[in-house]
Image (cartoon, rainbow, N blue to C red; front, side, top):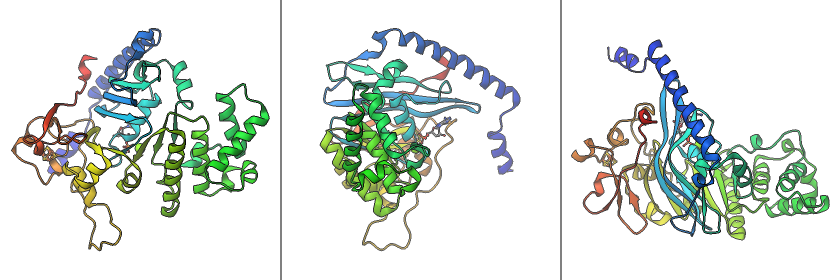
Length: 395
Ligand SMILES: Nc1ncnc2c1ncn2[C@@H]1O[C@H](COP(=O)(O)OP(=O)(O)O)[C@@H](O)[C@H]1O
Ligand code: SF4
Ligand SMILES: [Mg+2]
Protein backbone atom coordinates (compact mmCIF):
# COMPACT_ATOMS: atom_id res chain seq x y z
CA UNK A 1 0.00 0.00 0.00
CA UNK A 2 2.77 2.37 1.02
CA UNK A 3 4.61 1.36 -2.17
CA UNK A 4 1.57 2.23 -4.27
CA UNK A 5 1.25 5.61 -2.62
CA UNK A 6 4.91 6.35 -3.23
CA UNK A 7 4.53 5.50 -6.90
CA UNK A 8 1.57 7.79 -7.24
CA UNK A 9 3.46 10.68 -5.64
CA UNK A 10 6.19 10.60 -8.30
CA UNK A 11 3.79 9.92 -11.18
CA UNK A 12 3.13 12.73 -13.66
CA UNK A 13 -0.01 12.54 -15.80
CA UNK A 14 0.16 13.49 -19.46
CA UNK A 15 -1.88 16.61 -18.68
CA UNK A 16 0.57 17.71 -16.00
CA UNK A 17 3.47 16.92 -18.27
CA UNK A 18 2.03 19.13 -21.02
CA UNK A 19 1.50 21.89 -18.48
CA UNK A 20 5.14 21.66 -17.35
CA UNK A 21 6.37 21.76 -20.95
CA UNK A 22 4.25 24.82 -21.74
CA UNK A 23 5.40 26.56 -18.58
CA UNK A 24 9.08 25.79 -19.27
CA UNK A 25 8.80 27.03 -22.84
CA UNK A 26 7.17 30.28 -21.80
CA UNK A 27 9.57 31.02 -18.93
CA UNK A 28 12.80 30.08 -20.70
CA UNK A 29 11.77 32.09 -23.76
CA UNK A 30 11.17 35.13 -21.60
CA UNK A 31 14.47 34.65 -19.75
CA UNK A 32 16.37 34.32 -23.03
CA UNK A 33 14.77 37.53 -24.33
CA UNK A 34 15.72 39.33 -21.13
CA UNK A 35 19.22 38.00 -21.51
CA UNK A 36 19.54 39.30 -25.06
CA UNK A 37 18.32 42.73 -23.93
CA UNK A 38 20.80 42.77 -21.02
CA UNK A 39 23.65 41.88 -23.37
CA UNK A 40 22.97 45.09 -25.30
CA UNK A 41 22.95 47.20 -22.16
CA UNK A 42 26.36 47.59 -20.41
CA UNK A 43 24.63 49.00 -17.34
CA UNK A 44 22.99 45.64 -16.73
CA UNK A 45 26.35 43.85 -16.48
CA UNK A 46 28.54 46.53 -14.92
CA UNK A 47 28.56 46.67 -11.16
CA UNK A 48 30.86 47.16 -8.17
CA UNK A 49 32.45 44.65 -5.81
CA UNK A 50 31.25 44.82 -2.20
CA UNK A 51 34.88 44.28 -1.17
CA UNK A 52 37.66 45.08 -3.70
CA UNK A 53 39.87 42.35 -2.18
CA UNK A 54 37.50 39.72 -3.54
CA UNK A 55 37.92 38.29 -7.01
CA UNK A 56 34.45 36.77 -7.11
CA UNK A 57 31.32 37.40 -5.04
CA UNK A 58 28.34 35.08 -5.24
CA UNK A 59 25.39 37.12 -4.01
CA UNK A 60 22.17 35.19 -3.45
CA UNK A 61 22.68 33.20 -6.68
CA UNK A 62 19.78 31.00 -7.81
CA UNK A 63 20.37 28.60 -10.70
CA UNK A 64 17.37 26.52 -11.74
CA UNK A 65 16.81 23.82 -14.37
CA UNK A 66 13.46 23.76 -16.13
CA UNK A 67 13.13 20.00 -16.62
CA UNK A 68 10.34 17.73 -17.90
CA UNK A 69 9.46 16.76 -14.32
CA UNK A 70 9.46 20.29 -12.95
CA UNK A 71 11.86 22.99 -11.77
CA UNK A 72 15.07 21.72 -10.16
CA UNK A 73 16.48 24.38 -7.84
CA UNK A 74 20.05 23.15 -8.21
CA UNK A 75 21.50 26.23 -6.53
CA UNK A 76 19.12 28.28 -4.40
CA UNK A 77 20.28 31.52 -2.80
CA UNK A 78 23.98 31.02 -2.15
CA UNK A 79 26.31 33.71 -0.79
CA UNK A 80 30.09 33.45 -0.58
CA UNK A 81 33.24 35.25 -1.67
CA UNK A 82 36.52 34.23 -3.21
CA UNK A 83 39.25 36.64 -2.02
CA UNK A 84 42.36 37.30 -4.11
CA UNK A 85 45.18 34.77 -3.73
CA UNK A 86 43.08 32.48 -1.57
CA UNK A 87 41.85 28.88 -1.96
CA UNK A 88 38.16 28.37 -1.25
CA UNK A 89 36.99 24.77 -0.93
CA UNK A 90 33.40 23.96 -1.89
CA UNK A 91 32.36 20.64 -0.32
CA UNK A 92 29.24 18.51 -0.24
CA UNK A 93 27.97 15.18 -1.45
CA UNK A 94 27.27 14.42 -5.09
CA UNK A 95 24.35 16.40 -6.55
CA UNK A 96 24.40 19.23 -4.00
CA UNK A 97 25.09 21.91 -6.64
CA UNK A 98 28.88 22.34 -6.58
CA UNK A 99 29.41 22.00 -10.33
CA UNK A 100 26.32 24.07 -11.14
CA UNK A 101 27.81 26.86 -8.99
CA UNK A 102 31.03 26.84 -11.01
CA UNK A 103 29.22 26.51 -14.34
CA UNK A 104 27.13 29.55 -13.40
CA UNK A 105 30.35 31.50 -12.83
CA UNK A 106 31.74 30.41 -16.20
CA UNK A 107 28.36 30.95 -17.90
CA UNK A 108 28.55 27.39 -19.20
CA UNK A 109 25.11 26.21 -18.08
CA UNK A 110 23.13 24.10 -20.47
CA UNK A 111 20.73 26.74 -21.81
CA UNK A 112 17.89 27.44 -22.26
CA UNK A 113 17.01 24.71 -19.75
CA UNK A 114 19.49 25.90 -17.13
CA UNK A 115 19.18 29.55 -16.04
CA UNK A 116 20.49 31.82 -13.34
CA UNK A 117 17.12 33.24 -12.29
CA UNK A 118 18.22 35.40 -9.39
CA UNK A 119 21.15 37.09 -7.68
CA UNK A 120 24.42 38.49 -8.87
CA UNK A 121 27.82 36.91 -9.59
CA UNK A 122 30.37 39.71 -9.41
CA UNK A 123 33.74 39.31 -11.08
CA UNK A 124 36.39 41.90 -10.20
CA UNK A 125 37.78 43.72 -13.24
CA UNK A 126 40.56 45.19 -11.14
CA UNK A 127 39.75 48.80 -12.06
CA UNK A 128 37.20 49.45 -9.34
CA UNK A 129 34.33 48.01 -11.35
CA UNK A 130 33.06 44.48 -11.80
CA UNK A 131 31.12 42.36 -14.26
CA UNK A 132 27.84 40.89 -13.17
CA UNK A 133 28.49 37.57 -14.90
CA UNK A 134 24.78 36.75 -14.93
CA UNK A 135 24.10 39.43 -17.55
CA UNK A 136 27.47 39.58 -19.31
CA UNK A 137 27.27 38.98 -23.07
CA UNK A 138 28.94 35.96 -24.69
CA UNK A 139 31.57 38.00 -26.43
CA UNK A 140 33.00 39.31 -23.16
CA UNK A 141 32.62 35.90 -21.51
CA UNK A 142 34.78 34.38 -24.24
CA UNK A 143 37.64 36.63 -23.27
CA UNK A 144 37.11 36.09 -19.55
CA UNK A 145 37.08 32.29 -19.88
CA UNK A 146 40.63 31.06 -20.21
CA UNK A 147 42.18 34.50 -19.76
CA UNK A 148 40.83 35.32 -16.33
CA UNK A 149 38.97 32.22 -15.17
CA UNK A 150 40.15 28.77 -16.15
CA UNK A 151 38.91 25.36 -15.28
CA UNK A 152 40.44 21.98 -14.49
CA UNK A 153 38.05 19.02 -14.70
CA UNK A 154 37.84 15.66 -13.00
CA UNK A 155 38.70 13.47 -15.96
CA UNK A 156 41.80 14.77 -17.76
CA UNK A 157 41.22 12.54 -20.78
CA UNK A 158 37.95 14.27 -21.63
CA UNK A 159 39.53 17.73 -21.57
CA UNK A 160 42.39 16.73 -23.90
CA UNK A 161 41.90 16.04 -27.59
CA UNK A 162 43.11 12.47 -28.31
CA UNK A 163 44.16 13.23 -31.90
CA UNK A 164 46.51 16.15 -31.24
CA UNK A 165 49.96 16.16 -29.71
CA UNK A 166 50.34 17.64 -26.21
CA UNK A 167 52.58 20.45 -27.46
CA UNK A 168 50.08 21.53 -30.10
CA UNK A 169 47.23 21.59 -27.57
CA UNK A 170 49.12 23.91 -25.21
CA UNK A 171 50.36 26.03 -28.16
CA UNK A 172 46.79 26.50 -29.31
CA UNK A 173 45.71 28.01 -25.99
CA UNK A 174 48.71 30.34 -25.86
CA UNK A 175 48.16 31.51 -29.46
CA UNK A 176 44.47 32.07 -28.84
CA UNK A 177 45.19 34.45 -25.99
CA UNK A 178 48.40 35.98 -27.44
CA UNK A 179 47.86 36.22 -31.21
CA UNK A 180 50.89 38.52 -31.61
CA UNK A 181 53.39 35.95 -30.28
CA UNK A 182 55.90 34.40 -32.73
CA UNK A 183 55.91 30.63 -33.33
CA UNK A 184 59.23 30.20 -31.52
CA UNK A 185 58.05 32.17 -28.50
CA UNK A 186 54.85 30.11 -28.31
CA UNK A 187 56.84 26.86 -28.29
CA UNK A 188 59.23 28.27 -25.72
CA UNK A 189 56.31 29.21 -23.46
CA UNK A 190 54.71 25.78 -23.92
CA UNK A 191 57.94 24.01 -22.94
CA UNK A 192 58.18 26.33 -19.95
CA UNK A 193 54.63 25.41 -18.89
CA UNK A 194 55.39 21.67 -19.26
CA UNK A 195 58.42 22.16 -17.04
CA UNK A 196 56.45 24.24 -14.56
CA UNK A 197 54.00 21.41 -13.89
CA UNK A 198 56.88 19.16 -12.91
CA UNK A 199 57.54 17.19 -16.10
CA UNK A 200 61.27 16.69 -16.72
CA UNK A 201 61.13 15.27 -20.25
CA UNK A 202 59.71 18.45 -21.82
CA UNK A 203 60.63 17.90 -25.49
CA UNK A 204 59.55 14.25 -25.30
CA UNK A 205 56.14 15.05 -23.81
CA UNK A 206 55.70 17.97 -26.24
CA UNK A 207 55.60 15.43 -29.07
CA UNK A 208 53.43 12.82 -27.36
CA UNK A 209 49.69 12.10 -27.68
CA UNK A 210 47.47 12.09 -24.56
CA UNK A 211 47.11 8.28 -24.56
CA UNK A 212 50.87 7.92 -24.15
CA UNK A 213 50.70 9.60 -20.73
CA UNK A 214 49.50 8.31 -17.35
CA UNK A 215 46.44 9.84 -15.65
CA UNK A 216 48.58 11.94 -13.32
CA UNK A 217 50.69 13.25 -16.22
CA UNK A 218 47.55 14.10 -18.19
CA UNK A 219 46.17 16.05 -15.25
CA UNK A 220 49.50 17.92 -15.07
CA UNK A 221 49.05 18.86 -18.74
CA UNK A 222 45.49 20.06 -18.05
CA UNK A 223 46.88 22.23 -15.27
CA UNK A 224 49.51 23.59 -17.69
CA UNK A 225 46.74 24.47 -20.16
CA UNK A 226 44.60 26.06 -17.45
CA UNK A 227 47.51 28.15 -16.20
CA UNK A 228 49.00 29.06 -19.58
CA UNK A 229 47.42 32.52 -19.39
CA UNK A 230 48.03 33.22 -15.69
CA UNK A 231 44.33 33.32 -14.76
CA UNK A 232 43.00 35.36 -11.86
CA UNK A 233 41.02 32.37 -10.68
CA UNK A 234 41.28 28.63 -11.28
CA UNK A 235 38.21 26.47 -10.84
CA UNK A 236 39.27 22.91 -10.04
CA UNK A 237 36.20 20.63 -10.15
CA UNK A 238 37.10 17.34 -8.44
CA UNK A 239 40.62 17.60 -9.95
CA UNK A 240 41.98 14.49 -8.28
CA UNK A 241 38.95 12.23 -8.02
CA UNK A 242 40.03 10.12 -11.01
CA UNK A 243 43.62 9.74 -9.78
CA UNK A 244 45.45 7.35 -7.44
CA UNK A 245 45.77 8.55 -3.86
CA UNK A 246 49.56 9.02 -4.08
CA UNK A 247 49.23 11.07 -7.27
CA UNK A 248 46.37 13.11 -5.73
CA UNK A 249 48.68 14.68 -3.15
CA UNK A 250 51.28 15.55 -5.79
CA UNK A 251 48.72 17.23 -8.03
CA UNK A 252 47.26 19.24 -5.13
CA UNK A 253 50.73 20.35 -4.03
CA UNK A 254 51.51 21.39 -7.58
CA UNK A 255 48.28 23.36 -7.87
CA UNK A 256 48.89 25.14 -4.58
CA UNK A 257 52.49 25.93 -5.52
CA UNK A 258 51.55 27.39 -8.94
CA UNK A 259 48.69 29.36 -7.43
CA UNK A 260 51.11 31.02 -5.01
CA UNK A 261 53.57 31.80 -7.81
CA UNK A 262 50.86 33.47 -9.87
CA UNK A 263 48.91 34.97 -6.97
CA UNK A 264 45.73 33.40 -8.37
CA UNK A 265 42.73 32.24 -6.38
CA UNK A 266 41.42 28.69 -6.48
CA UNK A 267 37.85 27.48 -6.18
CA UNK A 268 38.41 23.87 -5.22
CA UNK A 269 35.32 21.73 -5.65
CA UNK A 270 35.28 18.31 -4.06
CA UNK A 271 33.13 15.77 -2.23
CA UNK A 272 36.22 14.78 -0.23
CA UNK A 273 36.89 16.70 2.97
CA UNK A 274 40.42 15.28 3.04
CA UNK A 275 41.30 17.16 -0.15
CA UNK A 276 40.06 20.44 1.27
CA UNK A 277 41.77 19.95 4.64
CA UNK A 278 45.25 20.22 3.24
CA UNK A 279 44.62 23.01 0.82
CA UNK A 280 41.75 25.40 1.43
CA UNK A 281 41.91 28.64 3.41
CA UNK A 282 38.12 28.96 3.45
CA UNK A 283 35.51 26.21 3.24
CA UNK A 284 31.92 26.38 2.02
CA UNK A 285 29.73 23.36 2.85
CA UNK A 286 26.77 22.82 0.51
CA UNK A 287 23.71 20.67 1.02
CA UNK A 288 20.86 20.29 -1.49
CA UNK A 289 21.62 23.53 -3.36
CA UNK A 290 22.23 25.68 -0.30
CA UNK A 291 25.18 26.62 1.86
CA UNK A 292 24.73 25.15 5.32
CA UNK A 293 28.03 26.30 6.81
CA UNK A 294 31.02 28.42 5.82
CA UNK A 295 34.15 29.67 7.52
CA UNK A 296 37.92 29.38 7.59
CA UNK A 297 39.35 25.87 7.21
CA UNK A 298 40.29 26.04 10.89
CA UNK A 299 36.73 26.86 11.96
CA UNK A 300 35.23 24.11 9.81
CA UNK A 301 37.70 21.43 10.86
CA UNK A 302 38.11 22.36 14.53
CA UNK A 303 34.57 23.44 15.34
CA UNK A 304 32.25 21.95 12.71
CA UNK A 305 28.84 23.25 13.75
CA UNK A 306 26.08 22.25 11.30
CA UNK A 307 24.89 18.69 11.98
CA UNK A 308 25.63 17.87 8.31
CA UNK A 309 29.25 19.07 8.59
CA UNK A 310 29.60 17.17 11.87
CA UNK A 311 28.32 14.06 10.07
CA UNK A 312 30.76 14.61 7.18
CA UNK A 313 33.63 14.84 9.64
CA UNK A 314 32.57 11.63 11.36
CA UNK A 315 32.43 9.82 8.03
CA UNK A 316 35.96 10.85 7.11
CA UNK A 317 38.65 8.23 7.78
CA UNK A 318 41.46 9.41 10.05
CA UNK A 319 44.96 8.01 9.61
CA UNK A 320 46.11 6.08 12.67
CA UNK A 321 42.63 5.82 14.19
CA UNK A 322 41.03 2.38 14.27
CA UNK A 323 37.25 2.24 13.92
CA UNK A 324 34.92 -0.69 13.40
CA UNK A 325 32.87 1.05 10.76
CA UNK A 326 32.87 4.57 9.34
CA UNK A 327 29.87 6.72 10.23
CA UNK A 328 27.19 6.94 7.58
CA UNK A 329 24.73 9.86 7.59
CA UNK A 330 21.31 8.15 7.61
CA UNK A 331 18.54 8.91 5.10
CA UNK A 332 18.51 10.64 1.74
CA UNK A 333 18.65 14.12 0.24
CA UNK A 334 15.07 15.39 -0.45
CA UNK A 335 13.57 15.23 -3.94
CA UNK A 336 15.07 18.23 -5.80
CA UNK A 337 11.81 19.00 -7.62
CA UNK A 338 9.79 19.21 -4.39
CA UNK A 339 12.01 20.71 -1.72
CA UNK A 340 10.35 20.92 1.70
CA UNK A 341 9.71 24.31 3.32
CA UNK A 342 11.59 23.34 6.49
CA UNK A 343 15.30 22.63 7.01
CA UNK A 344 16.42 20.38 4.12
CA UNK A 345 18.52 18.30 6.50
CA UNK A 346 15.74 17.78 9.06
CA UNK A 347 14.74 14.28 8.04
CA UNK A 348 18.33 13.08 8.44
CA UNK A 349 19.22 15.20 11.45
CA UNK A 350 19.98 13.60 14.81
CA UNK A 351 20.00 16.94 16.64
CA UNK A 352 16.71 18.44 15.56
CA UNK A 353 14.54 20.38 17.97
CA UNK A 354 11.01 21.88 17.96
CA UNK A 355 12.11 24.96 16.02
CA UNK A 356 13.28 22.76 13.15
CA UNK A 357 9.68 22.09 12.10
CA UNK A 358 9.33 25.78 11.19
CA UNK A 359 10.64 27.59 8.11
CA UNK A 360 14.05 26.89 6.55
CA UNK A 361 16.63 28.18 9.08
CA UNK A 362 18.29 31.60 8.57
CA UNK A 363 22.05 32.07 8.58
CA UNK A 364 23.60 32.70 12.01
CA UNK A 365 27.00 34.27 12.49
CA UNK A 366 28.78 32.35 15.25
CA UNK A 367 32.30 33.74 14.81
CA UNK A 368 34.07 36.50 12.85
CA UNK A 369 34.04 34.44 9.67
CA UNK A 370 31.94 31.47 10.75
CA UNK A 371 28.35 31.27 9.50
CA UNK A 372 25.91 28.39 9.91
CA UNK A 373 22.30 27.78 8.82
CA UNK A 374 20.85 25.89 11.75
CA UNK A 375 18.41 26.60 14.57
CA UNK A 376 20.83 25.17 17.13
CA UNK A 377 22.60 28.54 17.01
CA UNK A 378 19.48 30.72 17.25
CA UNK A 379 20.42 31.88 20.75
CA UNK A 380 24.18 32.41 20.60
CA UNK A 381 24.47 33.47 16.95
CA UNK A 382 23.66 36.76 15.23
CA UNK A 383 20.88 36.26 12.69
CA UNK A 384 22.00 37.33 9.21
CA UNK A 385 18.89 36.53 7.18
CA UNK A 386 17.22 33.83 5.15
CA UNK A 387 18.40 32.47 1.77
CA UNK A 388 16.19 34.05 -0.91
CA UNK A 389 14.54 31.63 -3.27
CA UNK A 390 12.90 32.77 -6.52
CA UNK A 391 9.19 32.11 -7.02
CA UNK A 392 9.14 30.60 -10.51
CA UNK A 393 5.45 31.42 -10.93
CA UNK A 394 6.45 35.08 -10.95
CA UNK A 395 9.06 34.74 -13.68
N1 LIG B 1 21.69 19.83 -17.17
C1 LIG B 1 20.94 19.55 -16.10
N2 LIG B 1 19.62 19.32 -16.20
C2 LIG B 1 18.87 19.07 -15.13
N3 LIG B 1 19.31 19.01 -13.87
C3 LIG B 1 20.64 19.24 -13.69
C4 LIG B 1 21.51 19.51 -14.79
N4 LIG B 1 22.77 19.68 -14.29
C5 LIG B 1 22.67 19.52 -12.96
N5 LIG B 1 21.39 19.25 -12.59
C6 LIG B 1 20.89 19.01 -11.22
O1 LIG B 1 21.43 19.98 -10.37
C7 LIG B 1 21.80 19.41 -9.12
C8 LIG B 1 23.20 19.76 -8.80
O2 LIG B 1 24.09 19.13 -9.70
P1 LIG B 1 25.68 19.32 -9.66
O3 LIG B 1 26.01 20.75 -9.47
O4 LIG B 1 26.21 18.69 -10.88
O5 LIG B 1 26.12 18.50 -8.39
P2 LIG B 1 27.56 18.25 -7.79
O6 LIG B 1 27.52 18.87 -6.44
O7 LIG B 1 27.70 16.78 -7.70
O8 LIG B 1 28.57 18.87 -8.70
C9 LIG B 1 21.51 17.93 -9.23
O9 LIG B 1 20.29 17.68 -8.58
C10 LIG B 1 21.39 17.67 -10.70
O10 LIG B 1 20.48 16.66 -10.95
S1 SF4 C 1 17.93 23.35 11.73
FE1 SF4 C 1 17.36 21.63 13.02
S2 SF4 C 1 16.97 19.93 11.60
FE2 SF4 C 1 18.16 21.50 10.53
S3 SF4 C 1 20.28 20.89 10.79
FE3 SF4 C 1 19.83 22.34 12.42
S4 SF4 C 1 19.17 21.03 14.14
FE4 SF4 C 1 19.09 19.77 12.32
MG1 LIG D 1 30.10 17.93 -9.83
